[in-house]
Image 1 (cartoon, helix red, strand yellow):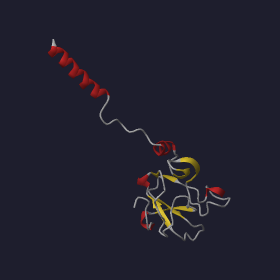
Image 2: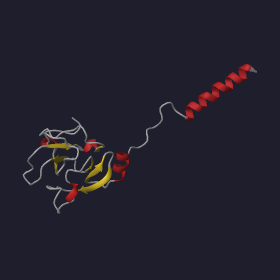
Image 3: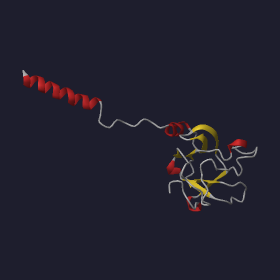
Image 4: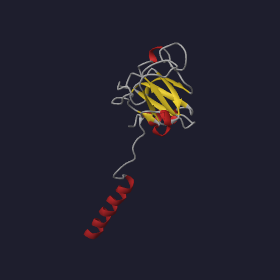
Length: 152
C-alpha cells in the first residue's frame, strides 16, 4: 500500500510539473503590446517609459517636433521617453536633439531589428547629450548613415 501511495504521489507531482512548468512563459511587455498594435511603416514616440503616453507617429520625416507642422507638434519636442520602430523599408530611424533640414547636431539611431526602446534613459546622442526627453526631430536613413545606435 505504501508503494502505491508513493507512486501516486510521485505521478501527481510529475503531472503538476507538466501543468506548471518551472520557468513559465513571460508575459508580454507594454512595448510588445504597442508593437503588436502599431501600424506597419511607422515610427512612434511615447511620453513615458514602456511605450505609454502616445506622442505621435510618422511614416516620413519631421525636422521639427516643436512646430505646428508634421506628425509631431508643439509639446512633443523634448518629451519622448520611449520609441518604437515598425518601419517596413529596412531603414533605421535617426533621431536628433536639434531641429532643421540640415540635420545637424547630435543624433542616434534605432534599427528596424531593435523594434523599440522601452526606456531612453542612459542613452546619449553623438553630441554626448542624453536622449531621454531630448528628441527634437527624426528622419529615416540607411544604417550606414548612423554614427551611433541606441543598442550600443
